[in-house]
Length: 248
Image (cartoon, rainbow, N blue to C red; front, side, top):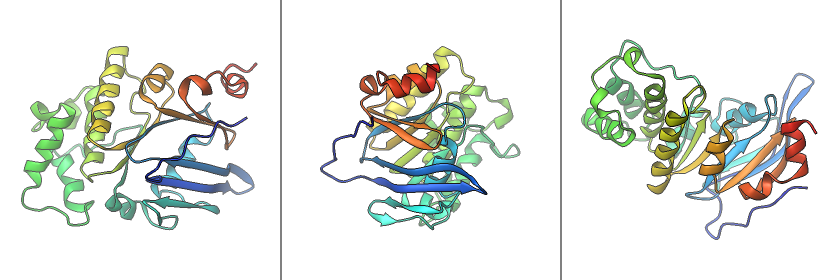
């Protein structure tokens, strides 16, 4: 049985209604409803193959659903490409960082400042890029190559590039995969700080202690359907969620 979150008095910043996505005869998502309030921290979880990546790709514009509507700040963005969604304030990071290896860390952040904003920066982009690197703790590495960064620093650079589009909603897609416990704590603390600065965050993650610590609400997908939506402690006690993760 689904748990339904209380409605935000301000209305959602993002709302997906009845999102369905098919690949040939395979239904990857079936009538998924989802919402995020301004400034909210939402964890999106599910077993491998549950449809999380497909759903995130529909939200961010990499895929277009066959059915359903996606609203951002009450505007229909269902048919918009990813770059137009980014310019409206919906940004994402990727599970596997792919920085421009021939550019410095600073120049990697300058790229979205020059191309992903409604009014792209030319002059002053280095100054703003350095300020973003300061926010994620990478300012001392500004002038080196990304190939010289550690794994956790690459994840921070990925988040910095997403922040360069000045998002009001950030989708963090498995930003902690493969990191040590202490590095996971670093990324969680960084996402918490960004949230305190006013950015709503959707966290897609398999590391459950990170999800439980970070999320105000958890949404669970299984086989392309939403099976739970509510407070973390309540959701993780649901029998359907236990069966999905433990096979019982």
